[in-house]
Structure formats: C-alpha cells, structure tokens
Image (cartoon, rainbow, N blue to C red; front, side, top):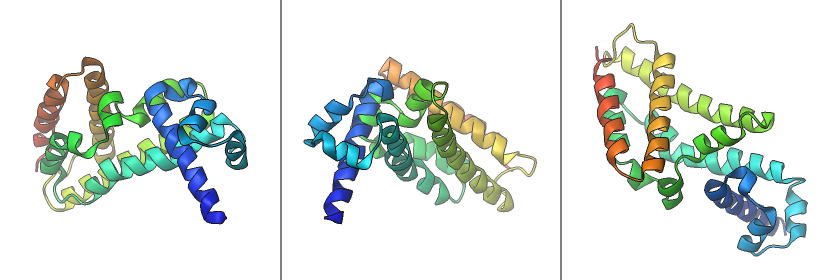
Length: 198
C-alpha cells in the first residue's frame, strides 16, 4: 500500500513537471495533470494540499534531480574545468531531454515566471542556483590548487558569471530555434575560460 502511494505521488510530480515545462506553473492545470497521469482527484489531495505545493515538489524533486544529472555531477567529476566546460557544453544536447531541447532550462523558465510572484518558488529556485554556483566554485578552487587556474581568480564570481552566460545562451537558443546561439556561447565561454589559465 505504501509503495503504491509513493508511486502515485511520484507519477503526479513527474507529470506535473512535464506540464510545467511546457506551459509554465501558471499554465499547468491540475485536472490536466490528473488526466495525463490517469489518476483521480482524491489521489492529488492525498499527497498535496494545493497546486502550489505540487509545484514546490516539482522544483525540489524533478528539476533538482535533472540539474544533478545534467550539470552538478558532471562538474564535480571534472579535473580541469577550463578545458572540460566547453566539451560539456558541446555535448549538452546529447544529455538533455526532448523537453529541455524544445522548451529550454526548466529552472530558468520558472525563475523568470515565478520569482517575483511567490516567495516559496523564489527560495527553492535560489537554492538550486546556489547549489550549481557552489559546485562550480569548488571545482575552480580545486583547479587553482592544481595550478590550472590563476590564483587571483575569484571562484564564486566566475561561477556566477559562467552559469548566467550558459542560462542566457540556452534562453536565446530556445527563442531562435537554431544552433547559432549555442555555437556562439561555446566559443565565447571557451575564450573567457582560456583567459583564466595560470
């Protein structure tokens, strides 16, 4: 019984994530989520008190797990981020889902939509960005100790800039629907990173 309840909850969150990625949180409809998941309204209210609570779960569980797979774990495994970040960006489309390729980064989309509307969303989105920034900053610090990166480089500031650049490139690519922006992003971030070499 417990297993079925956990599976039902996971199905609700996963389906809500798909709906939010396509339509945004405000465009997501609980009745459509239930229809797509083939569940009844009682299943929703058994696990969530509101649409907002379901949205929070999407950020904490689905989006966070996606970021962990696509970005965090790969950055953490790097030896020299100055050389490996451009390669990671070149293979990004191979590691993302069709939803991400069509609709962009779900974290950034949600940040644009909900950060000024709901404190709970803003805090959860900020926590995910902080995790991303800190993982990269730690890796740059390690690279400084290995003499890959100049000692005067401020790791946290550099990490914020790189992630902002990546997210901006993804957003423009989503609008243009071409590879031009992706290629421009990779080339210019590569040039910037070379400037940080020891």
